[in-house]
Picture 1 (cartoon, rainbow, N blue to C red):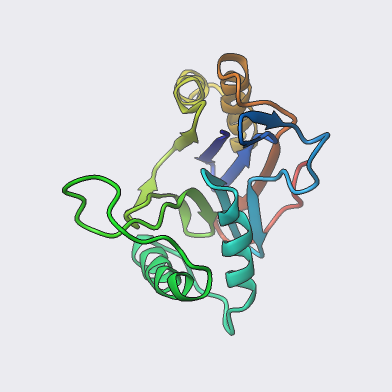
Picture 2 (cartoon, rainbow, N blue to C red):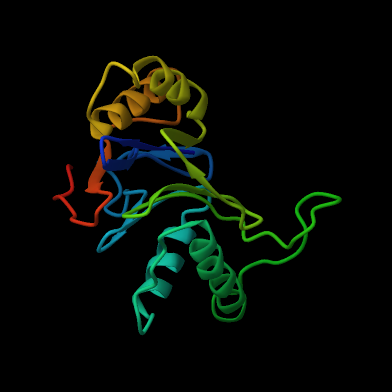
Length: 198
């Protein structure tokens, strides 16, 4: 279980996640795991993954093998990227296919993530739906308190990094499987990446 949060304000975006991992029936903190980060950072592309931990490895490995860097500036480009990845990962990584719920229209990727890039902030869902958010969003086990904190503080705070931190703090306060320290990155919508805040 984990919580990931994204925010956009004043021409900048921030994305972050907590540092716990749930394996079997136990939670492991950053003190126990080296690969605790929920973030995959490749240039100006920042993914935050929730759900199956193998997605961090599979998506990073796949992204690193691409011959050209995808644009990923809008929902359509992100959708096309995910569609291609689903087909390839089904072949090379044995992505489990099938339908999750009776009546699902599409085979699930079982990927739930947030994406921040120069084009904006986006949510990625298991049926490959890509949603662009105007202000903020949160996913994972602590998403409800995180969204509440984002809603309560959005108008008073200027920094998207501080907004993400407030969302993660609220999630850690009320969700027993979310804990700090947090990994947060901030980038400009224009494309110049700032150093990751760790």
